[in-house]
Length: 362
Image (cartoon, rainbow, N blue to C red; front, side, top):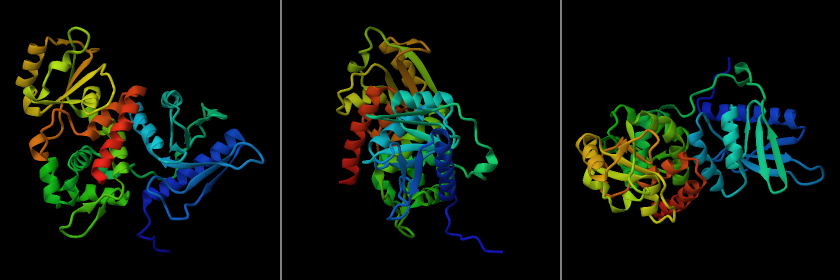
């Protein structure tokens, strides 16, 4: 029996199978010719090779960079839209299954996609392809599917990556340094770093030398897409209605109450032209009693599940990370904005992403 090559990345193998099946089913559903072209420089970090689709006989094919991702919740689509926009070339999402509700959201966001069932959406100035209602592919056709991103896709992994993104110099620290900053269990750190390395999101430099990030933008994009699925649902949150016309936040210093602005208010204070319609305050865990009570009382907030103010318990410790700003770190602001699926917020997130990347890569 031939020994399996230990260097083969099972997640890469799964991507290749999904791409091949998606192309095959797209051709069957549309009658268009489609072909996967290998990347001459090897597997790219954003996806293996390119996809060539011939929409008009006699004309050159349209070339796309496929971004193979797991998509389960609509909140992740904003981050994917931003990632595609930042790709620098035409790109599209390839997923195992884009269900009807998510497909509708993709069409509204003009987010191109193919899935393993044959569903698709491609829209350009002179092109519109919509395929919907294709039945789910049999599990045996796909083969065993590995977890989308292993330990990095669990809450401790997301908290560890957030620590790196919020304080980039931590990336060169030891596992003990990363554990102390993020607050995750020491035993979780090696597994998360190993998972990130397998995905080519970090590169370990050797014993005691920490890591390097080959592409900060990609690490940010992955985390922003994962945050609403992995961390956000686990956080304690409360909603309130603000008095007046929703401009109450202009006179409020959230740090007085043990908190920081997130979302739209944070974006406006970080230089975006966005005019906030919703307010998010992240309170440190120790402030969720006294600080919250003082905030509600002094600002005249009323409990309302549909209100314009959301108070969320922070999942990090400002002191551990050395944070002291009135706004949460920019990566979290970006994730908040993208998860809203609001076109204004997605544009603001794109602006903040460029600002953040210039700072971290300089």
